[in-house]
Amino acid sequence: MDFAEPADVYVINTCTVTHISDRKSRQLIRRAARNNPEAMIVVTGCYAQVAPGEALAIPGVDLVIGMRERNRIVDLIEEAAFRPDGPRQAVRDVRTAGEFEELPAPALAHERVRAFLKIQEGCNNYCTYCIVPYARGPLKSRHPEKVLAEARHLIAAGFKEIVITGIHTGAYGCDLPEKINLADLLQELVQLPGLVRLRLSSVEPLDVSPELIATVATCGKICPHLHIPLQSGDDAVLKRMNRHYTAEYFRRLVREIRRNIPEAALTTDVMVGFPGETREQFQNTCRFVQEMAFSRLHVFKYSPRQPTPAAKMPDQIPAPVKEERSRLLIALGEELARSFAARFLGREVEVLAEEPSREFPGHYEGLTGNYLRVIFPAAGNCRGELIAVQAEELIGSNLRGKMVEGAGG
Ligand code: SF4
Image (cartoon, rainbow, N blue to C red; front, side):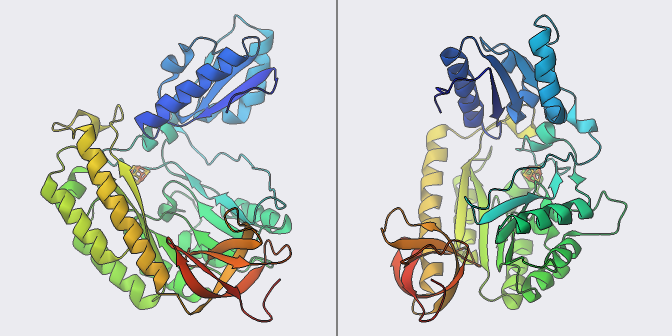
């Protein structure tokens, strides 16, 4: 982004999840200020929340706005514009924040088929490596009627698939006076007329209850796809991460999910190079990942974040070792993704058409319920349609096939 379009105010929404995110946020802020010396530069988001002084010290920054003030952003900018000598920082401690903050996002049905629907914010888990509880504060669930209202709005705007998101999504409802949990909420959402698909984003292993598995297994509109962050397959590392489960617990959970939803896509996050992670512990993780046969792997290199406990732990792993472990695990993930997709060769799969393929002219592409990307020839516009495709060929970990006679188009 070069900030070449002229504007009076530039609002930079920052991220702080790794030190690379911090660096990118700072680069973006500097670029905006350099290219637009006359404009007001406003910094908000997680980096602004956890390092407001640092953000304010970047030359050209006029105003820093924390996570709890985002709903006042227009007022704060106006105040700053009329009072240039007024306060330049509006950042409150997020750890005392009370309720879910309603920030409705516009629905753009003509551009997208899938919409994200946020049902909660914050997290109380304090995994030792994670900055999120410091940047986003404690868990706050969105009231179910607000969730349902936004879902209705998204459906009316033409979205076909709604992806349920949050930070600690699996704990949904535990802070609400209503007795409601994630499974209950999903059961209410699938009743909404016009909804084609509902997909869950990340759910922590300890929150995947038998009730949630049964809900995903029995509600046809809920995609057979669970993203469950593993982080490590070694018990000692999991303990130091403050993750409260063991590899054996995870193994049993996966067995239970596959018993109930045999073709479920199980995707995960794994962190490499956590402080003190030995070669053997890393190998335990690789073996475990292989055994679980995840269909997709997101690999993260550990990044020390102040003030998390892990940033102060001894035996920080050198960058080249993290790099090498990440490379090995990514390769394993790609292999697993290919073997999962290969299971569907020669079979008919149902695809929600998303967009014309950039790689294959005259083709469309979209996702199956179990998160396989499928490319197929399509003459006209079939965006948003459910298409039956006969899978014929593997391209990387994607499938290519042809439309089944009489389907879609
Ligand atoms: S559960 Fe997720 S968001 Fe919460 S502290 Fe752990 S890693 Fe961070």
